[in-house]
Length: 305
Image (cartoon, rainbow, N blue to C red):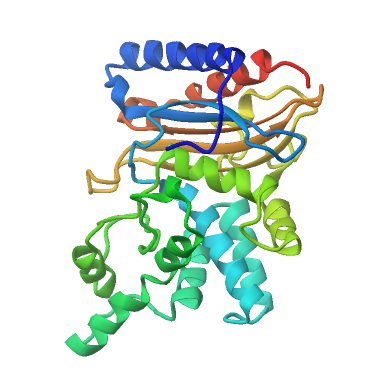
């Protein structure tokens, strides 16, 4: 399952990323199998990208990377008229990506799926609620990319455990928690910048929301998702579009201790790449140096176009 071709240079860079990750995981006592990535170099003529991957189909709790999928689904619903533009929706889409707000994310999920959370519902209404919550899954099933196999997009984002209908909905979800793979995330990031998942105008809105500024006064704040993530390893002058996610202890081992990132970078020399990294383990989730090291390797080794 691959929408990209590879070449020797990307295989070389992929080997460097793998070696660095395996060394860090070995030092931290974390199984190497809890790491995967996809590195892409888009073709300027719109052809198939070049790429390299390690464990691209590793299915993992996605943390806040899933918010990019929710953003695309919301833009698609606006495009079809299923949603109506309004100020609170604009604010929620911005804060969901810029600061990774879970409250903003859950507002969007409610709008797109026609559900609300919290208190218990009697059985007929609960069954209808569970079905409505599949709205975003259904949208991406219709997209039809094989790289999306095995993903799940029907759960809200929580800072700890779930209660009421959210708990019942999770228990009844055949796929369990939200789930993504490195290849699914890479496929969507590529489509946002070089594909046709949305109209050009809607893709531009998504691109603008994903943009981050390495010179921003907020760059030192963890919520801005630069320091401690792939963007933290980029050279000065790099253009960045990204979305990161991390969990610490949540009381649910299916979601605890993840640190992921997805970035599109255009380096000062004009080289462009997309890198998605998934990782799991308490020592990795708490390590603010790991992802910047990988970002730095990719940036330093990427040749000018």
